[in-house]
Length: 201
Image (cartoon, rainbow, N blue to C red):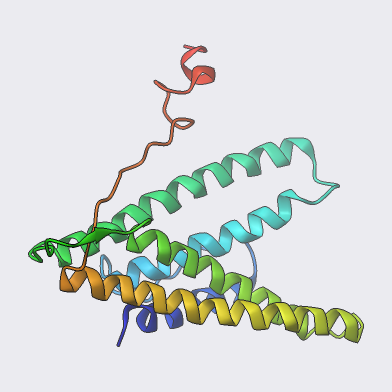
């Protein structure tokens, strides 16, 4: 089983579990063993799914400004959690392949495996919600057909991205690629780097 063959059903499971209640305040009930890679993949997609719906809610033109500010803070926290988790998943790969000696001609990739998996997780949400649009009964055929065309592209993108991720991981395992992970350089959450924050001390 490739890594994306492991990941994709877990992403779909997290999305389905969330939509049982379809509420951003639903507590997570992660079914996998704590600290296993499956646990982290489920958690990653759950965070992405909740944030997807945060982003829908905050675009409501009638949203109360005070509620929007509270929600913006939740989105900021979600973004930080997402970044932390991507780095944790990359740590899994770094540890797994720590004994692989890169070949002399090994090259580095433009992104780490976990950031590519982050894109796959978000793509699973795009596919889920676009498929919902193709099944709506309150819209005309033109809308459903347009959404079906978009869904077809997203499914093609899923196949291509999955192939690319699995090839990257295979290349790292074989020493044809090597990993180099840059830890967070976000400045806006750091009180010592964000001038709005350190200016208010």
